[in-house]
Length: 349
Image 1 (tube, helix red, strand yellow):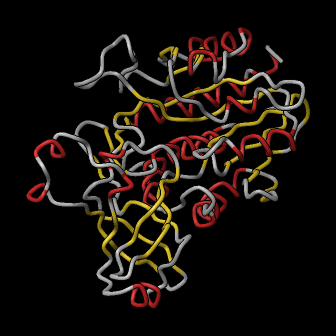
Image 2 (cartoon, one colour):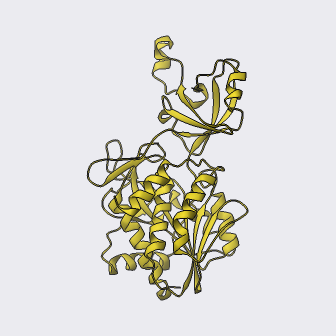
């Protein structure tokens, strides 16, 4: 198994819903410390790993948090009702096994709902809403659940482990954006002597409002930024090429714009920089023009008087589910593209 795959598996299996990234942050710090001069955690919880140098000052960013749930209410019989943290498609929640992260340790549960046997015919045709689901942890009462450590505010993540599929594909939870985090660690390992100052930033709370990207960019005030992400591919049944022309196995995606311009329209000089870095080093790439979805780049590029920002994403299938699929080859090429871009930054900034 490659070093990159080992890191990805470790990060995918780690648990860190938005606002509760401590465990993931410690893993990343342990992995990246040998490749930088300084590591610190800022007030919001962003991990900032710096390789000292001169000008320009580059910010590389990937978010640590994953989508999850939070306990809202425990009823008299010990069943748990929850809110969603980040963007879930409700149908992917039902019948999942979950982990509740309590002060007493991990508690396992399953997401249930009214069985179809007792539904009216018209209700069977409708998707079950998250508000009509609950989590069964085997408790017999509210007091029993509390003795297990479960209470309002307890964070919840999917109980799903990383696995290899055919070819070079892998599947796991939280690959958005632990895949991007693994890419940044690998890129920092590969980057050799450069004159620039490099800040590798692993941000918090991206899934709930791009919060860590906003504060870290303001504090660092870089000359240019690159965001390492995953994005959705259009190479599987149920999605048309006009909605996403990206394919797994065809290399990283360089964003031109996302969210129909409500997110980021990448500056021409940044696009030229990234495309030339790829072409000069025979790295295959795809161009992304997105109609929906945003990344930390959406807020980084609007910080202070504006920061030129680009996005390099690994195409994925089934994004924002516990069974996201990506190609290790694409992930490796994403890291290579960041390395070559950083090493050629003086030509553009």
